[in-house]
Amino acid sequence: MNRNPLIPFFIIMAFGIVLTFVLSFKGLGDAKEMAKEKKGGEKTEQTAEFNPEQFYQQTCSSCHGQNYEGGVGPSLKGVGQRLSMDQIKDVIQHGRGNMPAGLVPADKADAMAKWLAGLK
Image 1: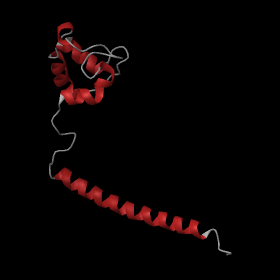
Image 2 (image 1 turned 30 degrees about the vertical axis):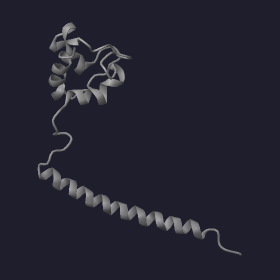
Image 3 (image 1 turned 180 degrees about the vertical axis):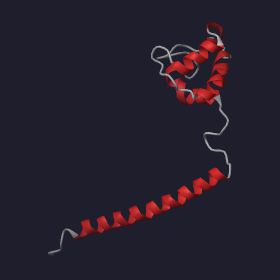
Image 4 (image 1 turned 30 degrees about the horizontal axis):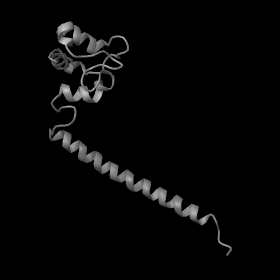
């Protein structure tokens, strides 16, 4: 049994090279398909309707809590009674304390501030 131990390594290398080319061509086809979808005017994630509550659950709830009760960040219950809409928008855009600036896109800040002001 004097087999060459390098043969399995060459087979794996050849398989990897072939797989790389196959996946590259697959990606090129997907890129062309995605370009067609954009030209067709179909909704993408960026053009989808903004939902402040869903955005909160994805981005803000880790610090402000699932039920707006606070945690690392302050409680957001009744924030509309403590701050004006402009103040809320300013905090959303520029941050405060440990809150980083720019978490909410600038064009969505008004909708987010309005939603936060209505929290009870």
